[in-house]
Image (cartoon, rainbow, N blue to C red; front, side, top):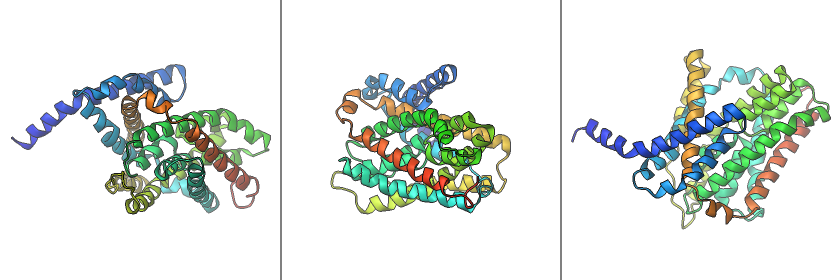
Length: 337
């Protein structure tokens, strides 16, 4: 059998499940664009409706492939959204704030999760999703954590929770910036450094003003650049401390693709038209991966968990908002104002 024949046979095996995930993703994108609302949440809920197909031998291999390999492709393509020059425009003070916010939120969020009774990997997953970039970060971090029987359930809970909280923040945080008398620049920094998902950051920023929206988007991209180093560090830590029932994950080689694409974009090697296309492809790949995760998820398993993961996510989100809010309020002369 030739290499091409083997690839063709593998494609036939994967195609039904991948098409299922793509169909759910397209439906989610259509509903989100037509009626509003977070596309990732739609993808999970619609995917769960097809959970009965996860045990079908025709669709299971493709669903598994979509939830892992297409996820990695989406993270790699996310590198096209970031350039070093955009980040440099807001100065070293903003960069230090973002690094401090991400670092302290992962550390404090881990302790919050453990205090709520979550496992170490689940606490890290939850804290990392809040600290960096919501659902995208959750999926990237989950790919390097030790795999247990609860891993996929914990990932779905985190994606649902962080997406819901991000939507709530998009609606409520702009009012907070007015309440505390932030300037448009300060509001942009606050929104970009605290809201979890990119789409909600942009939505909240432009609720305040066009300038605040532009600043919020760049600050959010600063957080995205920290995804690769954060995942590398998490992978190294958990590769040394995998529990007895955990299966170690391979080192995240796909993050080299993310870093390489970000570097190429920063040096002007990616044309503007291609950059927009790659960013859109990244978004679609991530929605497909979340749709596949939804198909793999049982509502019964989710309801058995209880309120602790949600409480941990809410407290981690509050930590990030308070930390950044105080820094912005008292950072005059260092942060943009």
